[in-house]
Image (cartoon, rainbow, N blue to C red; front, side):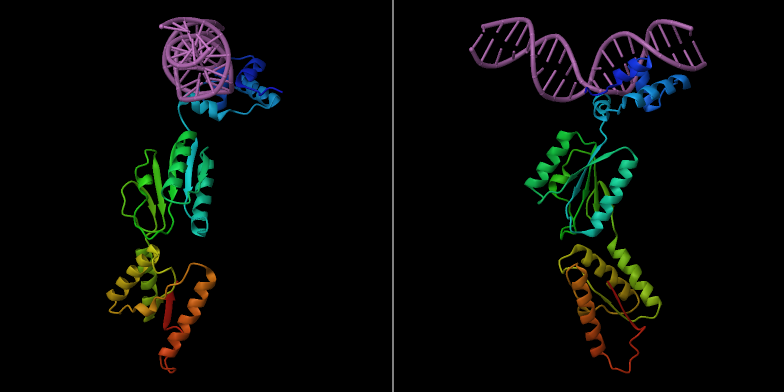
Length: 256
DNA sequence: CGCTTTGTGCGGTGAGAGAT
DNA sequence: ATCTCTCACCGCACAAAGCG
C-alpha cells in the first residue's frame, strides 16, 4: 500500500505533475476540462496534498509555535483558542509549548520550534510580577508576537490589555451613577494586573475629588471562591463601618 | 579500513520554454 | 493568447564512490 503522490495523480489524469500542482493551488490558467480531470484522479486515488513537501520546495512554513505560560489561566486559554481558530482558517498549524520556567525549559521549547521550522512564535505571557518579557523571548530571532494581560515595557509586536484604562473607565461609570464609595476586590497583592487596575481606579477617584483608601481594595487569589469570600467580607465590613441610616444600596459599589 | 566527498531520492514548486 | 510541460531546486538522510 504505497502512499499516493502527485506523480500518481498526474499519470492517472494524463498530465504533468506541475499541472496537477497548479490545479491544487488554483494557480495559473488551467482549462476547466483539465481541472475536472485532475480532480477526478485526486478523488479516485484518495490523494492528499503534502504540505510539508510544498513548504520544503517553497522554503516556507505553515507552522506557528505557540507558548502558553499558564495553563491554569482561563483567559489565556480563551486567547489561545481564538488564535488556533484564526490560524487554522489561514492554513497554519500550531505547535504548542508549555515551558515550566523562563530559562532552560523555555530555551528547549524555542529550540524545538526552530527544529520544526516554525514561521513564527506567539508568546502568551502569564500575569507575572514583571513588566518585561523573558530575555530568551526578547532575543528570539524568529518573528514574534507577545500577548500579555498587562502592559509591558517592551518594543516589538505586542498585544496587551490596558488594565489601567479599563479600571478607570469602570470607576468613572460608577461615579457617574452617583456611587461615592468604590472598592476593588481581587488579584494577588503582587499581581501586575491588580497594580495597574488600582492605578486606574486611583486616578479616576482623585480626578473626581475622592480619595483612595488601601482598605477598600482587598487582595485575594484568582479563584472564584476566594473572590466571593473576599466580596462578602468586604461588604460586611462596609456595612459595619457606616451608620445604619445611610442608604447603602445604590451608594456603594466595588470593582472586581 | 575509516573518513570525506559526491550522488540520489523524498514530494512537491516556480520560471520559463513549448505546443496549439 | 492559452494551456501545459521541462528542468532545477528545496534541506535532509542515506548510500555509493573516492582517497590516503
